[in-house]
Length: 141
Image 1: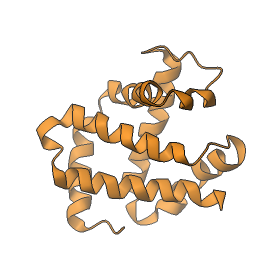
Image 2: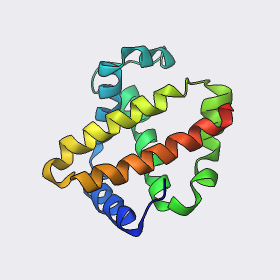
Image 3: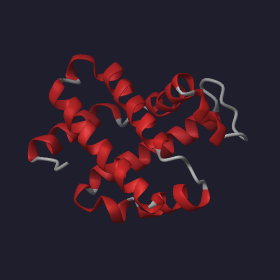
Image 4: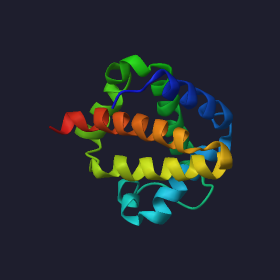
């Protein structure tokens, strides 16, 4: 999917409204673990309690990766290459989990942005998250 100029503008605008919110990072992961409990298996050494420092720290890694992707939309493969290698070769995360995480990101953004998370915003984020998932899954082939 190709991100249009309008998509890019919507992504930057919506991200600018939530990226500074410390709670969003943990909330994305808490939602993932609650809705898809099997994803907890990748974090056996973490305290997965709501608001734990482990969950907050890992959530911040996700938000940092999204922030980096948004800053380098024209070069996602290079930007996410190290992350793709880590997940494919070291962590061996099942690629389906990237799609599950994307769903949780959508819901979390919608919860925080409410009416501002319009159909256009949803579509733009869906395109971006699909591209990010694709890049992260490429190493599995």
